[in-house]
Length: 613
Image 1 (cartoon, rainbow, N blue to C red):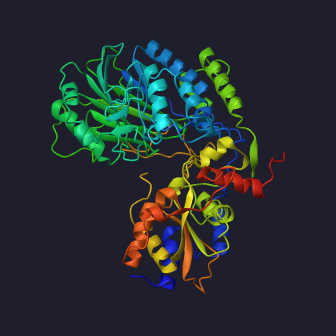
Image 2: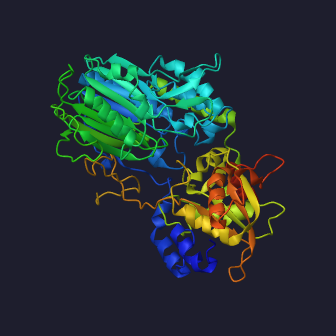
Image 3: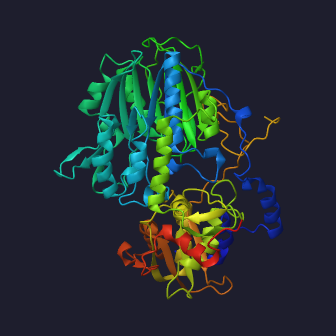
């Protein structure tokens, strides 16, 4: 059932947000209007007047998630410039404050340590140095993320070298691994962890991963709905010596059924015991309410956010009541299933999303720039610098002439990272001896991870923009053009392809609204627009729409091949291709032909190597 190409071209491309009929003058005006996005970090980031102090409760949490290797900090952005050494100083100072206040403080992480920077991804296996840095932080409980499971070598290294360091506090309630020594399927970490805080709160902790199917053959992920039926889990949630259930999950905290199932299972067994959940994976700042004594916090991504949660009103705690926070009884929850037992305990909560920078850390610890650092934190900062030097990350590929953004600008903006790759980088670099033939290039917004800022572009930045060095471009030659356009329409309209105040100057940044309103960000920012990343990216090369070719080469990232094959066959009304028909398209003798390599090749070809002062 081929469709008319000319009748759908404008509609399809406008729908994708990649090509627009907007006039050049309109685009120029709009890009001038958003020029504030070119905020330069060299400007002093004086945010102390804009920070709101934290509220402490009897039981307090510091939370990180989805750090993805950014432990060295964001060198080009003062908003998130602190490194993990400074974060260690912050945690140690906060532990001291908790002791002075006579309250509890628990430090947790909910996974995804890999795939995001050269610092984490230039080692073999990736994460060797960043795992060592991570082990220097006094985390009390941790859990796993899906990025620990894509690559068998990473999983095995994490299992053998990272997990043992935590002495049973690295929790994987539904993730197993085939032991490299015995070949037997065993829990990746511990299923659960029971402990008592210094102020007598008895806690049963779990660590779950969402129902992830993209893991390697070295690991097994049991669906949450099956894991909660197991004898060990049912025994743990029916214990009568638990004052609070602490559930870590690499699962987004809003509108995910895995959380609803976990909450319902615990609530059915313990109608009145508080449940505190911490999520991850979607890279959001968010706080959701399940019932009067069950909430969930998610704390952003990429060492841009430190999450803070305080709980007050715990009868089981010997810590003095702090009389802070607010009840969540008035929040109408849409997260929990209906008709669950309703707890007779209403706790008070305060949550905050702290910007990951030294100024915020100094402010919240009540120190000065001169007194903030601890010796342990300074030593860890030095270790980070040493590791960076060993990885030789500073040698530049070129000098990027401008900022490119993922979600802060429309896809047809000259500042759009997606447009830059789709219209300039891919057509120029991804080609072979058939490069003069009509071709289309399929990629995805999910192939990119971070904004790309003006200035030096080096090995570290290479992984920050796109860490997927196992993704390659393959192709089907001579595919009927009309079938290709039908496949684009079919897939771009379907499921995602990757499962995956006025007195003071406010810097653009996070402005978060969650179940408790809009006062969660510790630092006030001016609002940044958000445009959803494109599902499917499609670029025509060497094609004249006034003289359409009969066939084209279809080039696509390897993880798109299965769905593209099915869509083309559907357009043809028969099986023209199998997944195995795809051929290698972009192959280089120096092996610089993965998705991660494309931008460095473009930079070396078009940009000066060094930035002029």
